Length: 419
Image (cartoon, rainbow, N blue to C red):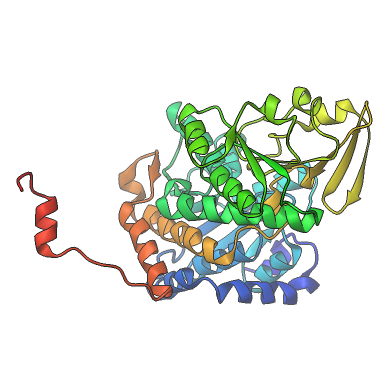
């Protein structure tokens, strides 16, 4: 395979810088390094093709190299137009991985890259947001026959998969990596919490302390965003549709109210719901002058950009990744990173130590699907608990942390119904 001639990337001259970035994250991903050592010996993907669609930055690149070390022929594309890093793409091509991705392609190019990735006829898939799976189950069903299964990274992607499964249309098993303990407890909470504020602070260079932050959605990602906002000195308001999560936010010390009321108070807004039109025309109408809007959900539909454009008399880019909209009454609101994932489109995504656990889960889940695809049926399934615990144990060992173990007497006590 001549990956240089077969790939679509911006500039191969950028590869050196990409290699430096990948080398840096590798040094901080000990769990994935341990999985790589195992894969190099066992070659679980020998003779197979793997297609990956993820945010194409250094940590993702290292996951691709780990899968490649397991014997796979790997093809990768981006899962978001603004999160692809061109130097990473070039470095991967030099490492023998086929790449179809560039930073900020137009919608037609982005779609073409996804389709070209699928046209390699993969046996296994790692997806982020469900784009590859959706194309396979709709316009390119001719590419379905060879696929054994795969793994999905995000809440959004799992929702799409479960909709397919509910309609009886899912054609192969997919592991819901996002629902694993070692994913949502750490990646969604601590990873999103830190990386969202990394992206916002890097982009705006404004203080957070003393400001009011509105967090839309109090799932694990929302919990992390709210927690970090509080740590930066902000007053935090949470909006929710789930009464249980709303009570949880209240008990965690945050104000809870509907978005229409919260919109009057917010200096910063962060949407993390996975749904559309969370902030729209009725909310823009009551916002403060200078409100800053951002999204950390997968698709750029949580902040309604159609409404915002319709209500604005003018707009302009005032700083990299910041667009200013002037409303009819002269108020200005600012949208970060085109309403796309602010932590990736305007930052470098989650810390390497966090993605170490998530991508270790991706790697071992893919190996599990490859071993069991004939037995597990065409369904969305959870990461096996023993794999979740294995990744956590590897993390503890990397941190030189020991924990207690049950004695035989304690095990017997827990398994008995008598005292």
